[in-house]
Length: 225
Image (cartoon, rainbow, N blue to C red; front, side, top):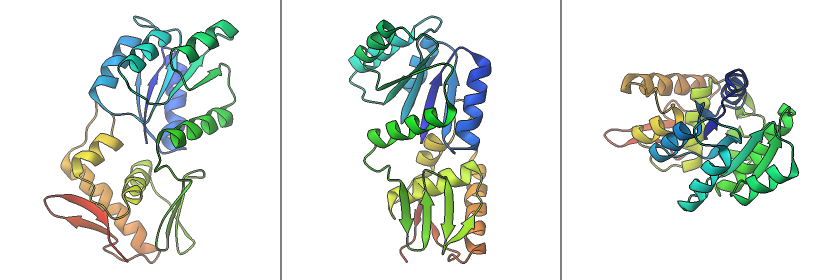
């Protein structure tokens, strides 16, 4: 899952990015003003936008309104220090899907994010399975034959992406677009290294060595068992 965070409080943004990447295994782009947020929205596809209401250059309500005028239905979570009911109404009327006031309870915020991501994707099931392979999206745990598989955020993201496709091909370009930030794309060799280590970790708990299959010239997929 790929998230855009538009937040001008750099300390808060850094803390949120760390939690979203390290604990929830999302891919996160973070920007500090509304105009830059709009540029990122036009350049890539996101599953969720976390949007502060008080932003330089283009405020969050105007950005959300512009997004909805464009016809985009990307879920938007407003995140702001302003707790006036009029501000909430203004944000929701602009098209926001949810509204959280700072200071917030982190577990509640993460639960709201998961709820919005489920609402925005028919494929976002709480548990993904492929034979004996199981990925629990709520706990971010992966098991094979009930044996825990410890993965890095990128390895987890790769497996999540492959599981959602249920044996269909995933191109290298799709992997890069979904799992890396807009301004830091990896080399082809980097993608191969992550796939290699993912295969090795799955094999170590009893999975077939070719469970993640390479289709040369096209991409990768989970092999039918």
